[in-house]
Image (tube, rainbow, N blue to C red; front, side):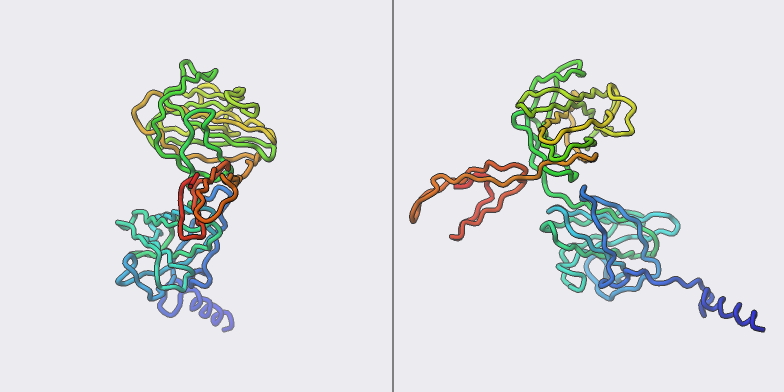
Amino acid sequence: MRFQFVFILAGFLLFGSAGKVAFAQPANDNCIYAQSIVLPPSGEICIQSSNLNASPDGIFNGCNGPTGGNEVWFSYVAHGLNNTITAYPINAPNNAQQLALTIPDGNCTNTVINTCAAAAGPNDTATVTWNFAPGTTVWFEVTSLIGDGDFEICIQSWNPQPAPGSDCATATRICNKQSFFSADTSFGTTGVQPSCFPLPVDEDVWYKFSVSKTGSLEWTATPLDNVEFDWALYDITGGCPGVEVACNYTVGGNGSPIGMSPASPGCLFSNFCPPITVTQGSTYALVIDKFNSPLSNALKMEWGGTFEMVPSSNSFEITPNFGCDSALVSFIDSSYGVATYTWNFGNGNTSSSANPT
């Protein structure tokens, strides 16, 4: 009799009074228990989650209304100004369907929203973007409008990067290992011919970085169009043009990523070279060339390895450095690694110029 009682009780706990399997609510069903996501130094991460058995919060907006959905909550600390969150269904047929994303203004208890977006169809992706000051805690909810289940969310939190330089002397300085996108540029050619190139460069862009910690250099540049990228790396510690330390001329790699990876068995005529050791106190210039194509040379840049970059430096000169009343003063920027400028002179005047007067 005792065994029969245990069996009946266990069956009730497993199947519930309605005869269905009972699952616990997600731990992040309520916004005050939002799942905290820790971003890596690159500023981007993807995680898998589920809203199965979540409950609605009763707050509707233009993306999850008029019926709302069963939402779950997440939070992270922004690494950069530009923040993009995407959500898409996974693990069909157990996937969430027609996902919606909402970023409230402030913490998750605020019913005023910054932005929201809903997927166009049951199996489509929802994407939201918003600007946050680095260090801000960002709250967001994921809701499914049709069916609950599994989904993946990806976060990108980056600072905008200035455009690449057009040659070694004007190479844009990179001061951290965050990933970034570079828009299309049309500089033409500098005429430089790295040692592994059969001809001079066609349409080259330049980046440079200084090393604060000796270590291995790994990086990936992914074309955003169907083009071939070739590249060379120079040690420019003593100035331009520098000493070539690595070179890669790919063949037929249209649209393929390039760079330095420990998975690479070799260098020449392949997409990746093995990593090299870069030395503390040294400065390097990376030239990336788009091979003979009218298409865009826009790219996504990602950094890895054990080396570290010298961070940004803020340095300004004021001319003249004294004056009275309505004296005209010029500010000259000699810093590096600065993407945007916001000046407030304390008299009601502001500027976004690098060198305001």
